[in-house]
Amino acid sequence: MTSRFEPGRSSAPSSRQDELAPEDSPLTNAELVQLRIRVIALENLIIALLAEAPDRQLVLARGMATYISPRAGFTQHPITLRAADEMLSLVDRADRYLRPPTL
Image (spheres, rainbow, N blue to C red):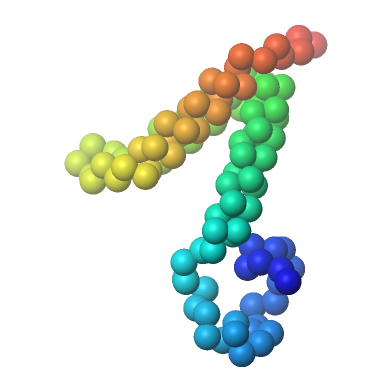
């Protein structure tokens, strides 16, 4: 059985059970565990890629964190603020690794 997160899964229901379970239903414990595993893997891949990224890409990544932060006069949404902080954290963690010298 494939989860709803599997690539290539048809959006058409394959059984009566799928018809009864809306896509916005709460995730099962197994789905949450799988999602956490994938997020950890993606974070570490991003750190590895950023560790060898040129300075201009690191500046771009930091700029994107600033871009998603709420602007003055707008609601400070906690999840957006945490996402921006996490982006900066990933760049900072990547910076701890030795980068190869540029030619």
